[in-house]
Image (cartoon, rainbow, N blue to C red):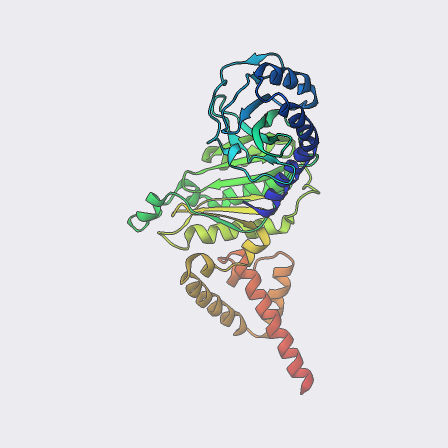
Amino acid sequence: MKTALKQTIDNQRKVLVELLKQPLAELALILSADILLPEKLEKHLRKAFPEFQHCKYLYVMNQQGIQITNTITRYDNDSKSLNRDRSTRPYMQQHFNHYNFALSEAYISKHNKRPSVTAIQIINNAQGELIGYLGVDFDLRELPGTTHIYKEDYQWQQIKGDPAIRSGLFAQQRLQSDMDNNIDNVFALMEALICEHGVFHGKFHFSSSRTTIWLLNDPYNYRLLSMQELNDPDICLAYPRHAYSTQASVPASAIPKIFEYFRALRFADEVIYLRAGSINIINGMVSLNFSCDGSHYLPYQEFLNKGLSFWFGTAEETNNKHLEETLESLCDQGCDYIMNSIIKHRQGESVTELNNLPHIDQDKIIKELESVMKLNCRMQYSE
């Protein structure tokens, strides 16, 4: 379990322990005097019940874990569990603290099939000998909630998929989908929806040629867009204009770069390829699902910084060779041409040699050209 999530759960358990340990110890002391008198035990439980305001059931067991009272509920006494052997239940396997008290991990209740927790208090006699147990059951629905919502620790995670798909991976290959054939239009439309029409989460299903989107103004409902809608720019008219969210952790300028990387992962290999990809501009997470059914979740910056070799190995070598050839071609044009190319790229204009490259690779080449020009300037200055 993630550390932050476990900490949130542990904090909630500490709250419950603080609520219970004192009243349970006091009740156990009262019960010890009448441990052989079930009717009196039930009267004590009924009288004490209001102190355990979030509790569902109260009951007493003997030292063997056999229930010796009816189950006391908020409204009546339930005899169904009388004489029930609870000794093997998860809550009876706990380590008791110095208060002779233990709070179980959450479990699914045997009869109601509800997520539950049980507090067990040891009942000792005057000589300190174990003579029974006091049980208090809680339905998780009825517990007081934490005062804050658990916040996800956003970092790269890899999740393996269906092993049956992985075992047959090399017997398949990518088939050109309708979305593949229209990928430029699809990316352009999704960029417009995200940057200008309030979409904060968008997912491309490349193989099945559809997208799903979530809107800032209606986050509880998703929209499914088929290729018929994705091929029609008029779809933007269905969603009101919305300024790019101030809550976004992804800058608008990164959206086309992310989409270009999706393109590279989709077409880089005919066997291992991107089947679905999504971006959430609020939490900044990118999700990827590949043909091997493996899934990845990672922050967008980390996604953009990883080369194709991270995903495909040798595919990066081929890509790097192509980039080197493009870089050499530009350098052969001379310093003036290089400077003009750098300026045009920074101003958002197209550079002929870079037109067929993803934005990520275009940026790499421009940075290399800038380094070349700085080196030339230093050399000229030193001369």
